[in-house]
Image (cartoon, rainbow, N blue to C red; front, side, top):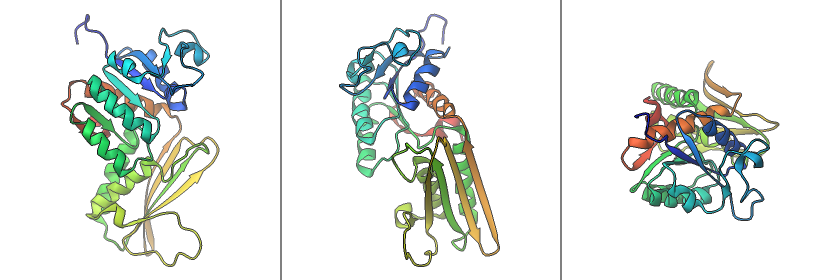
Length: 272
């Protein structure tokens, strides 16, 4: 990039949320990108305010808007950690604006993924249940270990997050479950075991189990447990600062600038 080429402009959706505010701060202070927009839902008290002062700091010269299309029109990338329904709407608008759409939203269903696929025919979509380097390495390791061990090894994914998280299992846990299923050559939907309560009976051979913990301000902890008779293998990732997810999302937004329309993930971004 030459010295006179403008830095890629990034819009943050859900700007008032925990991740939104973190992203605003990091993009605003970046020497590789520009903050050009901040989006919130209609009726939110921050709409019309400068995002910097709304967050309790100095003005950043960017007003919070509820008009996502207008904001996206001036951007080269959109970073989106919101809700499934909102992310689907943003995907269509980002595709219309030909902006890279980085999606960290979790709790997605098949219907949402189908709509992302339609939007990706026109623009770059980078979606991941977790944007950190460590978790994506853990995903690769999980796939390899699952491929090396047969179904006599039970697989259990245990995840912990803060009390405000609304979906379970976490997007990261499901990403790890998919990796384990791929390693075994099976479909996760047919081998998923979660939400145990009461007299559930013995564990079914070959199932991939999920357990969720919610409490306090836990940023994110994930264990992948491979348990057999007399031994266990445990793969673990612990996040202590959610900035790792924000930095990964910004990295993805920059990586996607010269890519062809399509769906990508953090494995692509990190070259893993």
